[in-house]
Length: 74
Image (cartoon, rainbow, N blue to C red; front, side):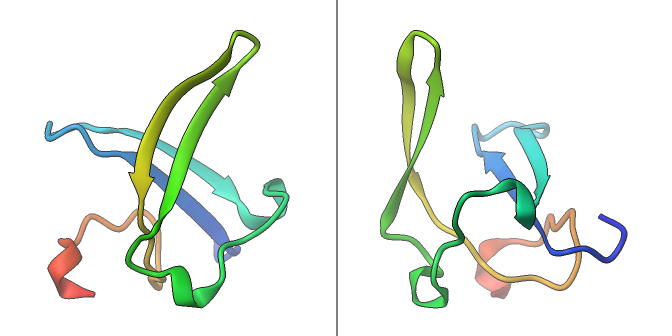
């Protein structure tokens, strides 16, 4: 994202084209601490109708987005 600090949120569904959202860090109200890399938190999706989805979350720090490398490489 043009060298800016950013996040890539991937809803992994096992397909070749999972749903992905890219956002800049300043669009978030908080960032996860480094010790949360690998998992241990929940990602929720909310709409005006309330909580719609809950997924187990995990993250990693990478040099560039998009990053399509397997999790085993990190």
